[in-house]
Length: 226
Length: 97
Image 1 (tube, rainbow over the protein chains, first blue to last red):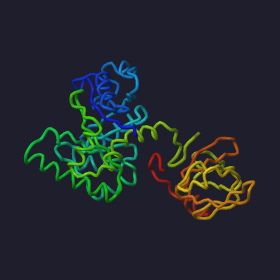
Image 2 (image 1 turned 90 degrees about the vertical axis):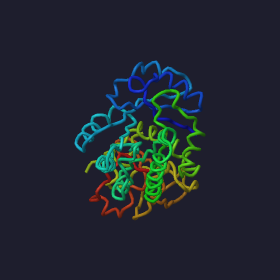
Image 3 (image 1 turned 180 degrees about the horizontal axis):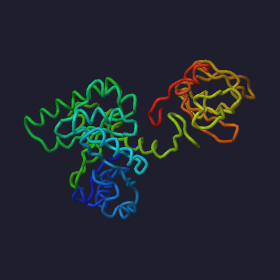
Image 4 (image 1 turned 120 degrees about the vertical axis):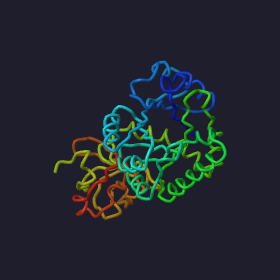
């Protein structure tokens, strides 16, 4: 079991990558992916975080795009530089475009539920092996009707992800080390939202598997140099 | 067409050295030899202990190209009749397992 969490570190978050790594190690994670939305080179003191022992700290990227062309340009430029590429599903159009792009690793559900997974997008995601990332931070932050609405969107997306067998990932998208949740807490939160325990475990392990696949040398689909 | 790692999924496999590196059937893992025949869903491998038929689906194969280069191929990308595989459109995904 190797659990990974996708975090936002300084300057975007409020904790440094090293602090995140230390806390994540204590909580039981095997690695963290520092995926800031801004340019991926702009992470405060990233090299220091990589020196933290017993935890893997990986540089990733979180793409926030407004239109299809912007998304494509950003994904193409970042793909070769980072082993983990997530896209924020800020609108239905971005969700559809990201699902159709095989260079995207994970498409993260927008916390306000703006971009939703449709049937056509789900089919493309399956074909292009784009995973659906469930952001559990609204479950912690929101209350009352807003949380109820978010949970209904979560369940609808979960039904589609199950139907089309799209790989799933869960994250709390921590902006500080205080936002980090232990793996068993994440599994419990996902269980409350409607995921099964085995699904939640697989979703927490998915980033590690993805990193392992992306580090290999693929010359064409399914063909790998040894 | 020269056999290269990037076009192996659309190339003739007969004559290539192959090792079965993984698969859903553990009895097949470790078979090593030379490809002597191929159908849509299986390949026939000549080994020192006779010919073994290995399904392509759910199997990971390591081919040795004439140049000596070794490539690992997910068997699922080879599923096609050999005469049709040359014109088969490849999926756009980066990896497929």
